[in-house]
Length: 405
Image (cartoon, rainbow, N blue to C red):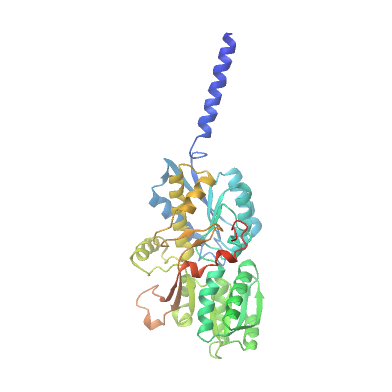
């Protein structure tokens, strides 16, 4: 009988220990955030160490702990390769106990990492990539497309350019998912507003020589040459277009994804008058200026929308963990979805059922050199586009999570 009692006591002890372990609010005693970025190539300036700095600022501002457990960050360079991003995401989720990704720069790596996040039921937030597929066909219950997407860029810039007389277009398109989606979305806007696409050419990622592509654009006689690319590809195309005299011949460039970093690299003399869309500008108001100056102190550069989005998303995630009382994915996502986002990045932002974070977008015009009063004083606000007009309406969504009426 004594042995039976001891055995019963041991069994009860093990059961209680298992229950206590199961009840741990933070699964492994630490909340770990991952960033898969371009740290060394054409998107390094618009994501890279700047996005890493933004996430670190958020963790510091949050206090370095959540639910009395430390917050850690891990960063890796995916080299703009989808297979590298997928392998690293798998390793982080399976072995390194990473709870959430706060960004995966570039669309092809992001789509690959998103599939791993779905399989492992881990949170994935995207600030750098633009492909609409992330919240459309590829959407998942644990993923959020936060800063911008190709639909918003196309509808903000494309519509404005067509309405200003740019009704014939030729595209220079980066040959991967982001560029293809951006060309497709912009084409729909152009044709819906009475314009016409005369042609397009796809170029490889990280192209150094755009001469053959620009010659085709010139030969098309299109009024507008749309740049469906980003980062170093965009700045190289714009610089070489100036050398080819596209502006002198009457053709205008439309940068469909242009960051403030690109304008800084190009200079106002080259970029003046260009229309572009971003979700954020450092000089919009007192809140944006205060945070951006802190960022500048660390990086010696003003932040762009993806970097500001990383900070905002990280804070939103950590607050959701705190409210949920756990880092368990489903509980945290429920809090993220039901809580509005109100900070320097977005006002009354909300995460829809397709994972799209809806917020205002802005149409900017790049200032002339004589209009700029200080370093990084580059933009004039042309229009503010409410989120429900900027982003794809749910009735057009191809996300399987969206319930159709």
